[in-house]
Image (cartoon, rainbow, N blue to C red):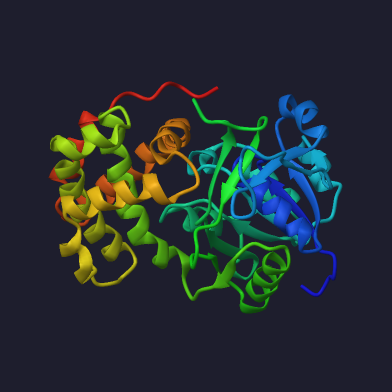
Length: 328
């Protein structure tokens, strides 16, 4: 991985792919995107972006246009890439495009930004460990404007939380190269021994909270002042045990600090500190990936039941969740 201008293909040009693609390009990479044909015409004119760490969303967006677009597996197979980044929801990893894409990848390193504790194992059915890097997304990104948000014009807005780099694990030399490339492009990044294990607790906490919030129509006030927050926290105690068992770790002692007052404070601060309307963002973004949330919750339930771990609160929370509209 010494190519001074690595050739990188990003699968997906949404909230995740556009940000990573832009900063990989700023770091010196030659960037291409693999997208559905119906999105090609819209993306050919470039991607307007709002890096919220450096500008306000009411200012004119910056333009990202130094990329190529591919829409077929044959185009991928006919090209040569050093890395292929998977920037899609976990549900997409179960679709029939995955195996042909990996077969067309040649010897490229696969960089997975797909969350979840089963996803790495799914990819390793098709790849040797020497070709797989796992990354953890820590940024917030969304298609602006959100409802009732003042904005210069439509574009992808994103924010890197302070002291929270995107982490990567995998073959050391490749991970070092990726971290260096992103840093050169202005995106915080760092290496970690095991991103999957590192992120397991965060996912175990986030998924039940999202399901509880969705049950209360994404209203922080309703979520904090009804049974939903308590139900979510009881479910989190179960998902943390399941995640710890899956990653062969001890259940974190700090789980006892996960009380309603803590999350009420976090939500209150988030609304006032973040450069975006947090409540609106969560509703907008996680409604779109509601199927992924349920996929993870169902996986926790199945794994917990297989290992004779408690899942009663998790099952009740899952059963109380609203139905998800089918994706198209």
